[in-house]
Image (cartoon, rainbow over all chains, first blue to last red; front, top):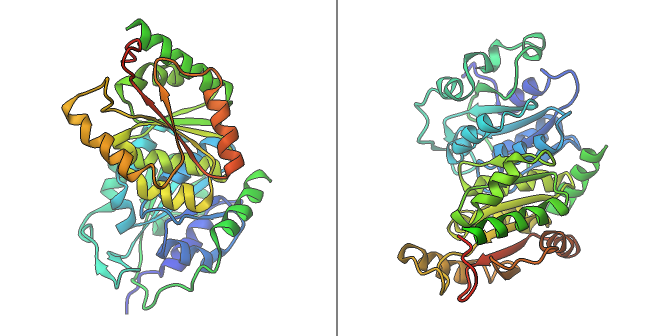
Length: 186
Length: 171
């Protein structure tokens, strides 16, 4: 029995670090399913694009909503597919964007095939891009500490592989877009 | 060189006239002047991406919030990004504008560009609306008109800029 949190619990814990609900942009599949299960909200943007694109989508959102906090939620397999986005984010310097990296070392939606990054130190990767003070483990964070972390920043969460996939999203692209559009204009 | 600067400035002014909330891209020689003007513009942020697929993501994030976004990439870069273009731009019906330098034209015969152009014709045109333009003779209202079209169609639009025979050198 693993002592690691589930993906659902890790996402809920990361969202709870914020005093008010941030925009949450989740990668396709596992992150989207668990975000909805953890905390469905109109401020969630469920991405159906290629794996890993959530960090880029979140960067675009952060640029046009500079007074709002944005949290991108990426799996280890997903982020490895768009690792260059971390370099782009460092260059763009958004003061309102953070990344939650949930690392279960498998492609959960693809029969839990191990990821090529399963032995990689994501904390070291995040610190190489964002700096030691801007990348930390979820387990080490409190709302007070998180409030003092400058952005862009990255949170690394080691999580337990889930015994089953999350419940289906049950939303069409039109529903996702309309709900989010309303929330993003509010 | 004079033609390159003039067309680059013209494209920038047209982008500016459309009042986008952000512009994003990966450089190509034909876009260099425009990108530098965008970088320096106080009117909107220019997000320099490390890879073209990211640009589609960045534009999608802005468009999901109902804001205008412009992407600038070369044809090879858009080819790298077709999964994102389809599953974000087309699937969600996002009206962003993609400016593509369509290298490998008759007046632009670099050997390394030929297959890019053929792949662009084979892969991009069947899935998306592409409007073609002479890079050295762009309409002033190009980008505002492209946004009007995309917003009416509720999908992204691609503007393919190419060098034409007999035209002043664009890059």
